[in-house]
Image 1 (cartoon, rainbow, N blue to C red):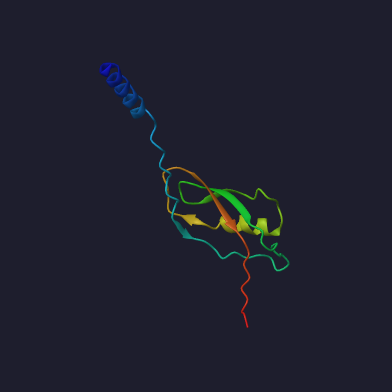
Image 2 (cartoon, rainbow, N blue to C red):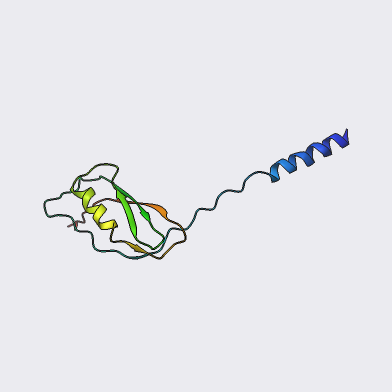
Amino acid sequence: MAVPLVVWLVALGGCASLTREAAVPLPPPALLSAAALELPTDCEPASGTVYRTSYVVGTDGRVADAASPAGDGCVERALREWVTTFRYEPIDASMPAVIDWIAVTASRGG
């Protein structure tokens, strides 16, 4: 009975060694520069709203394909324009990226 148990354990070990290793995520590209975000004077972000902008960092470090899945309001347009000013270190392959932005107003307690 010991022989079948050994064969079963060897077979199990062989199966375990065939499993895939977890893919190691690539580190995010290094941001080199970005312009200041400028919202139009009549553009008021909604309180507590997270604005998401997705884009692609190209191999030359420039941004393309900026998109706002939530809409096309003044905040979304300003964020799309802003991310196109981002410059990253060159990378080996284009990489999708996302930025979430929320307006925060500071107040002084008294």
